[in-house]
Amino acid sequence: MAAPKPRPDGNFFGKISDWFTARPQLVLTLAVFAAVGPFLAKPFNIDDPLFIQLAQNVSVHPGNPFGFDVNWYGLVSPMWTVTENPPLAGYYFALAGNVFGWSEIGLHFAGLLAALAVILGTHRLALRLCGNPLLAACAVLFTPIFLVSAGTVMCDVLMLAFWVWAVVFWVEGLEQNNSVKIFSAGLLVALAMLTKYFGVALIPLLAVHGAVEKRKLGGWAAGLLVPLAALGAYQWFTRSLYGHALFSDAAGFVADAHGKLGFSKLAGGLMALAFTGGGAAGVFFLAPLLWRARTLLMVIAGTVIFGGALCFSGIVLQKYDALDSAAARTEVASQLIFWAIGGALVLLLAAADVLRRPRDSRAWLLAFWVAGTFAFAAFGNWTVNGRSLLPLLPAVGILVARRWKFGGQKNPRAVQIILIASALFAMLVARSDFQLAVAVRRSAQEVFAKYGHAKTPVWFEGHWGFQYYMEKLGARAVDYKNFTPSPGDILVMPLHNTYISEPPPEIVARRDVLSVPGPAGLATWNAAVGAGFYSSVAGPLPFAFGRVPPEDVLVYVLKDKTPAAEKN
Image 1 (tube, one colour):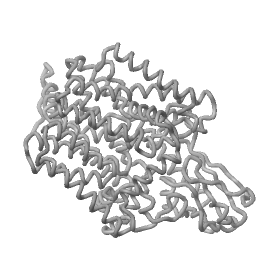
Image 2: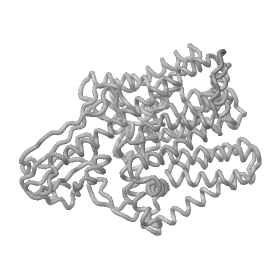
Image 3: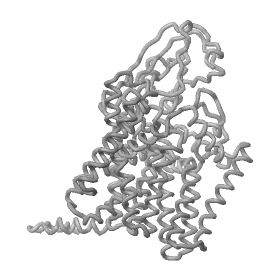
Image 4: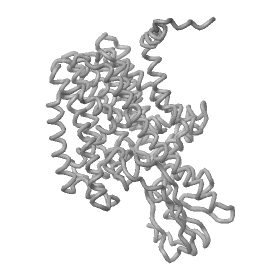
């Protein structure tokens, strides 16, 4: 069949536009592939290898997901003592590995499908909660937090997919008095909770929404018995297998980590504002279309005063030794305050929506969704990080669309331009994270190419992606309790890593330094510029602009055995 010829009046292109406008799910699917697809070949990094090992074990022993040992903290330990996440993501990536292959592209494609489910679920939910579902979905997709998280093979995006669809079926079920949808929502809550423990927060969130919507307790509450039963079963299952109820153990880990890290509540709150504002940067860019100038000036002034007091008094930055100059601290502080303004605007979106619609159960749902996620990331989690704030994005996207409609849907062309700019910015941040992963893999490859000849064992410290590729090449991770190298052995230590310790000088025959350039000008993970997307332990910013140092790896040629006691 011949293609239709374009009409002189341009009507052909108008019809094409109308055709896509009538198919928003297709538009969003293409947008997800366009935004996430370029990063499918991203090397595994940070916690990816831990989930891959879990998935590989599940493929062989599906009834005992954590029944294997890993070296993740410098010691060989049972997996159930190392992981702080439930196992469902392991089953998902095990299925993906067997279907698509265990390569970077195969597993990242599975992550892309989870990201697609989040975006389509946001659109479906927004159809009921706002007047512009396409804007709401795009406001989620084109954010740094979402695109960086979608480029991992961790549990976060998959959990959010279950979360969003649980809310979809819950809202529809209550409005339609449809018990099938209500119990489907309960099942999806259970799946979210078994993917990442934060999914349990859906239980009080949906309970509050149900109470506000129905004004009385009814049969709808029975749907929440499903995730409660699943939580009890998981506690029993893990206790019977490993002697510990792992959900309870995870809560204990958070409390213990809070005591060790020692960040104040004020510092955690400011960092969470910056992670929220930077991670959902589109809200910051759209702010002039959503708020009056007077409101914006008040938010800016308040945040600058609050952030400046915390930063320049040392409350926030005093624990970051890598920021070793006044200039470095000032640069990080200015970025921290800048993005914290965006975080304050996100919270204001939720508060203003409730104040404008105090009897609207949907407004309360969105407000508690945002406030609860923010409070957990700032004060409840062991560290502030982008992954912990990821769950608030669908609510924020819907709030943006509700606010824009409230303002009369003014300047639609400006919104389109800002969304395009937001998409480019988010992809720039995701590209930086991609470049970091490439540099980590390349550093492992170059070390092994130079020092990994067959007669000399290569040991290494550090974990994350570096560990994955070093082990794949044949190197051995140091177990501090059983490390007895021979003279001439090679010990490798990546500087920008975790659980590393230099060997005693008296056993080192020679030390070399290998440097691999990473991202330039923008980093998601580098203590020297304050970037700590995966944990604020590394830096108080979700990403940072500045002069990013290369990925340095120290290589030691040893001349004597290392006593195990020296490494403890």
